[in-house]
Image (cartoon, rainbow, N blue to C red; front, top):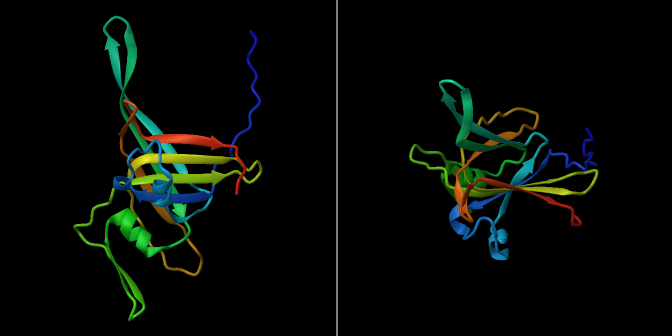
Length: 190
């Protein structure tokens, strides 16, 4: 039997940049306009441990005399976990917690109050990874997601990453319930 050998030109996934905007500010998450792309805010540099996990839960269909005859997808889950190495309080308040954020120009202070009534907003997320060896970009767009994790703020001498975890929510794209798109971009990197 002859196997079809295929040269691979992989993109190494690792560090990158994370961009977010509120989902309500996007008309068609599968096709952002220039104005919508301008609303994407870089919420931080990601160290090399970004993970996108796609999992499926199946229901088994069994026959009495034939055993397992089919598996039906019952649920799809997409999660993005990223260690962000920059701390921007306004972004944490706005995109993760839906918290109160204020700036006092007189006192020269910024304040975030995390309260019991805070609700994580629905966000559009874009993760961009550039392969340092080939210059190729891997762009991951999660159409609609909410912050779905815990955060631990560790105050020490060494820089630490703050883990952001987002769970994707289903969006109807051209009649199909969709979560995430992956785009390989070989165009020249600016």
